[in-house]
Length: 277
Image (cartoon, rainbow, N blue to C red; front, top):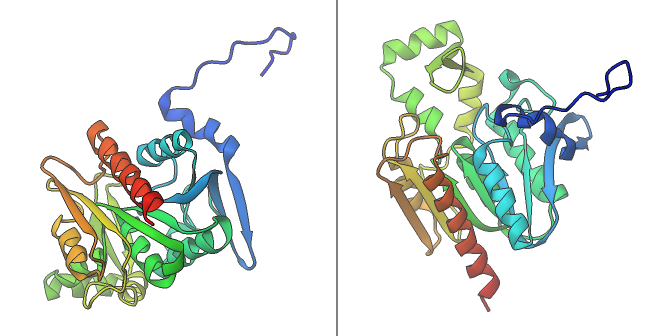
């Protein structure tokens, strides 16, 4: 802003870390009856559009979302990214959210904020939510791209803990998972969260999804093992399923070459979907 004397002060160029503030300019808020407002950014364009679903405790301002928006802009296709309830700029409290809460968010986006079938790109828990959305809204789902897809993962990993350990967490009422991705170094999940998540597990039976599916996973992923993507690939009913395993890929999939691969994958699907007769 201007200094008091009326002499304008130079505006410093934001460093990448502070881009979040300037990006908020393009953020819109969707008001939903009796539900927290959802923050989203939308680029209008051709069909099929692309919708990005971030990971748990993440937000829509990550590198993958940025790169996809830039790509869709250049291609003239529509793009939408948003924050789940309790995430980023959306209303609500993260700790009160459930998988069902966030699934509802995704379905709201598909029903109210975009037109026509979409390519859903889901990162980590966003990959799980993308599968749930595709099952619930087949007519709105043109194709799926999962990045380090975490289908059923929290439930599976909790249930694979030794009984004693599970009992300890159950007595405490919450499960603490060590992570490199937060300052506290842990994610906390309530027992209610885990019980609710069991209702959304997809890997115990064939997954009724018939659109093209692309699954990208890093062999060096320390959060979600790559074989989760293999299980998804085996269970979806679609005949058009590819899995790409990156030898040195980690969970975040935000290295330059990871992002290139994600963008190429979306490009290829757009091409496929727009030339199909």
